[in-house]
Length: 225
Image (tube, rainbow, N blue to C red; front, side, top):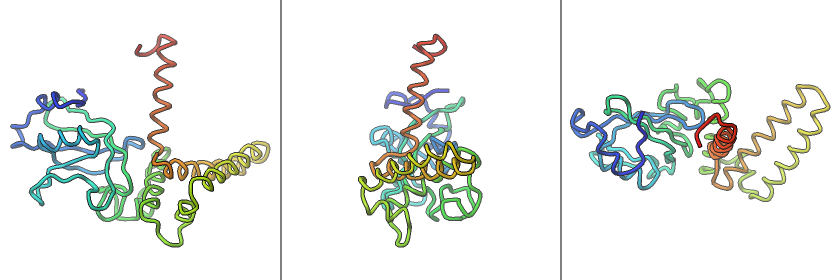
């Protein structure tokens, strides 16, 4: 698999096969959930590489279209891979808010809010969807939302809540499993809010962990140097 990182890599694609267009499947960088399918031409892909925001060729608009240009729900590109026939792309991206125009996390769910009333991703994939919901709350600030109340209170108050939940989680280690899991869930949620208040997300934490793992594997002689 070839990773597309520079303008020089654009020549690797078979643009002629699709009449100048190549399909791009966008996948959540953290959860692996498929978010959407779009089309890119050479200029759209070049702009994506330059800006870091996923840009498509809109067949309906007949022009370049950066996802989220009006809604703010952009796709922050983390990696672009070319398939074996050089005529399709797999894009790993971190969504800021919902990806679909219906307000759902993916264009492939059933229309529930961010997928939560439809088919949420199982296991750790749900964490990425929760992160997307928190991002949407940060952008839209709906009235009556507890998350909105936290964002409105500011970073200092959110950080205080993380500290409180951290202490409660530590104390719950000497209680029942149910108590520990409940406090841990509160801690993770408030940590997601704190990260988003600083313009970060769970995918940024994952990248740090991946980098540390790679360095540790290299020192142990098990990975790249």
